[in-house]
Image 1 (tube, rainbow, N blue to C red):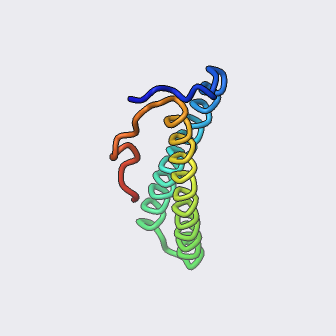
Image 2: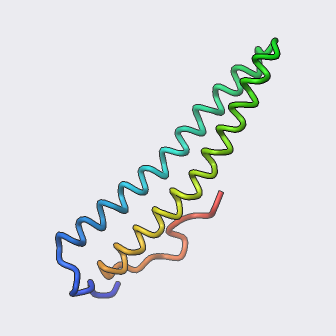
Image 3: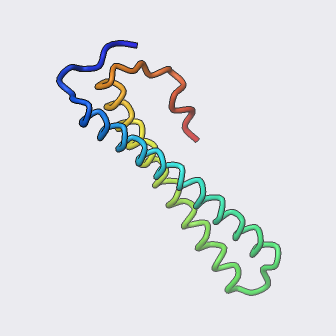
Length: 102
């Protein structure tokens, strides 16, 4: 651990930490959305009988793809905000802090 950057006051460090927390929570929300979409997809596909059901499944697939793209951007935003805070606070970032890209 290195020393905090003296050009950042405690309020600024607190704000940077809050921003990183918010970015992390937004990133995690993408997993919740994916889980819900997956469960709907499984339930509908098990009982799909009409062309409308199949069209709905296609729409769910499209939405899932968009959620995955959004996840990429929320992950990048979280990494950036956390890195800014960690550097300002003098906190070392372990190499595996952000996990692997899904």
